Image 1 (cartoon, one colour):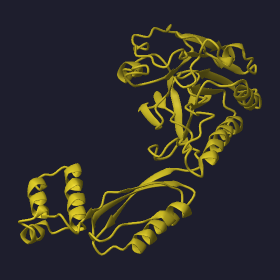
Image 2 (spheres, rainbow, N blue to C red):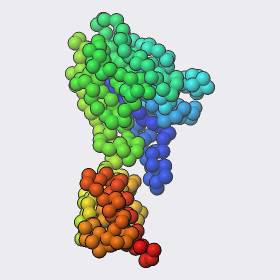
Image 3 (cartoon, one colour):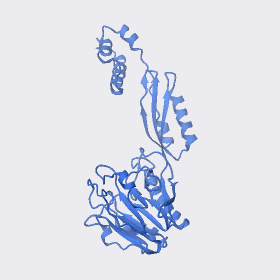
Length: 356
């Protein structure tokens, strides 16, 4: 039995909504999901598992129609869905009255149910969210019949507020594969047994690394995974980079270095830069032109002005600067305390009167 495991699509979301590329990111979510549907067709998959949060919020009828059309283009693929915390089923949900394509099975109950496909001897278990949080460990001591069927579990959660899980006990369960959703970083929790598919597209600047889905095969006799492969598919990546500076680093030099790093990795990606090291106290980095030229989500300046506090204290031992240094400087200062000392000294050095 061949399957594709995805989830956390978040159809309808606009990542980086305050950035010029926000609408493009929203379209990329839909385009990448279409690519997954195409992949299912090309690989002649038996099943497509969508482990919650297909939609970013309560789907409107037009969203359901768009997605259902895509499902109808792969009529030989059995599509299994559960609702996650974002697209949970509510009393007035359009999901309750929507007619899906014949190849779609939505496990909509708030308790564990299953659907058996005789032609591939596969039974799929799962349940959907009907509230924003599930704090009970509903998968604990889960009981399923011991038989000769391929058994699949679909679940959405894994933190204290969203279906807490004991991965060790799940690994020992009789399921052939456990298709998890909710955690946006793809990761295998038990080799050839249980995995988080992650979101096919990264959804914010913290979601770094490759994003895609899992393609797997289960042997019909042993009912064990024989192949499980992560397939990267995202249109871009969020990439965090650190740039070190020295007191000799100028604003122009730093801008050129950042531009080279982006050009090396691709200007289609989205970057977060962190500036580290010591800088000349008189230097202030202004990288506004880079923000208009490249996709930079954030620049964090953690650089510190290189003051000689001993020399400054000797020079200003009897005025406000000396008192300030004496009051704040100590061993093993925290980053916040260091910033307070640096910013305070810088402000005092640029004050022309009332320093004493």
